[in-house]
Amino acid sequence: MASKPGRFVVLEGIDGAGTTTQVARLADRLRAQRVPVRATREPSDGPVGTVVRQVLTGRIVVPGGRAPGWATMALLFAADRMDHVESEIEPFLAAGGVVVSDRYDASSLAYQSVSSGAEAKEAVEWIRTLNRYVRRPDLTIVLDLSPDIAAERRSARGEAAQLYEQNEVQRALAAFYRDLARHMPTDRVVVVEATGGIEQVHARVWAAYESAFGA
Image 1 (cartoon, rainbow, N blue to C red):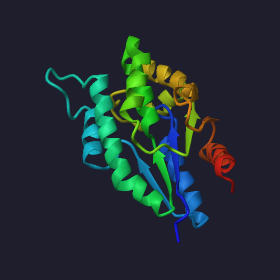
Image 2 (image 1 turned 120 degrees about the horizontal axis):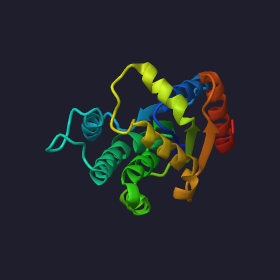
Image 3 (image 1 turned 30 degrees about the horizontal axis):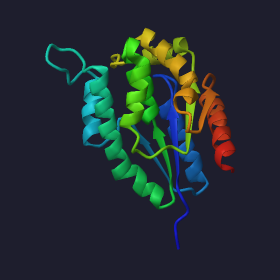
């Protein structure tokens, strides 16, 4: 007898929007309902994802001490994504489980296209082509948060800023995410307000999940 098809849900947003927290909260709620669920993230914990995380934190740089360019980063993220899908996402979905991922290819569309500057439109098309063979999410939830509030949250962490965490970059990313459905016209994209407490935001995320799949 065939297994019930799995569900693939992705949470997206600018740095500080709360994607990691809300992925964990959504996964906990599904587990409480005895739903088999796996929480995961990108960059992944696989071999390519580990390298990408080192680039983002400045531990790996190209000659001259600079970060790799946007196209190189897009290729690295795409390679990690393919490995992530093959080794972790697809097997769990095939068994009928729910995979909840903290970021996926929408992050590449947002972050690398914004980084490309004047080439943004061409970058979006190229990145979409680069990722055309990976599994599409059944639902992408964008956590929409003011860049100023997100900056305060990042500052409160007391951590060194990562590659894309400059405030002007985050403002451009916030605008891109609000318009994400236009860049991903065949995907189901829902934007939810991310201000307020953790449980308030979770209630909005859960409402989006229920609206897409039912209780």
